[in-house]
Image (cartoon, rainbow, N blue to C red; front, side):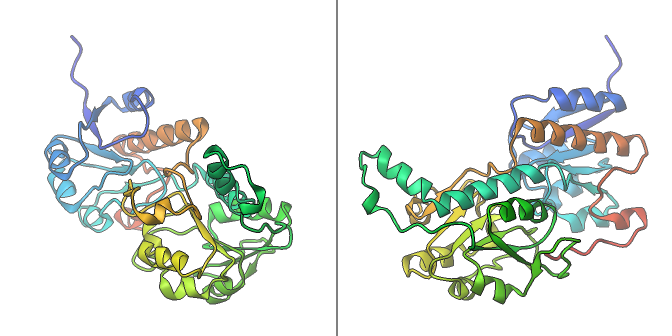
Length: 331
């Protein structure tokens, strides 16, 4: 029998059927993955006591989990956002937290565009009615030509900037708002959030979830939107006040919504908001493709290997653990 591996890596949860990629990459540092049977806090606390690294997809890595992981040298997110990891506790313990901020940019931009087109052409509405046995064009809502309408991007990071030329190619006028107001070398018109909400025919959210952005889109913001406008969210569910959104739809404040993310996840699909035929719902699928998933798993595992080998990983969210100033996270 061979010697026991030097390191153990807790995999809190995953959206793929096996750990073949993780096992292969981690072997470079003489490490093995430990597959959590459940992602509840009690289970993760118990397993964390005996691991050298933690990798998480959507499970919450709470202060209790981090404090229990006495040997932990890195916490790695299978993804972009870090709202499910207690960054403050990890930083206080000197544990670097990694992510892969640029792995599914094209996929999310494409999915956002698909949702916009579905809203614009009433694809979901006609699909449901036709599949239900109703073949009647006249019963559908009115349609407008896409070219010449306005798309407002709330946040202008990698995904929004990838979406920008694709939307322009359809003839959409694109405007954006961000905390920096930086167009990043594009010709995109940068405006305030209030201007964007008032002008846009489609409002698409591209923000991290943090204290500044939680429920950024609430009742006042929805009231500023056109009654003919659509809200699209492929970022984080908690950025939108779902009760306010349901109320806005009931009152005719906006025309509809397309949601790929929810708070909580999975959502209660019996909720009237998600059963509303003016709301398109997809199951947090925007990030997904065979290519993006393989890249995510490879790069996340590689970052863990680098830390275990005493090297600095590719993307560190709490750079202060390496003596660098922290990165400000706005939108």
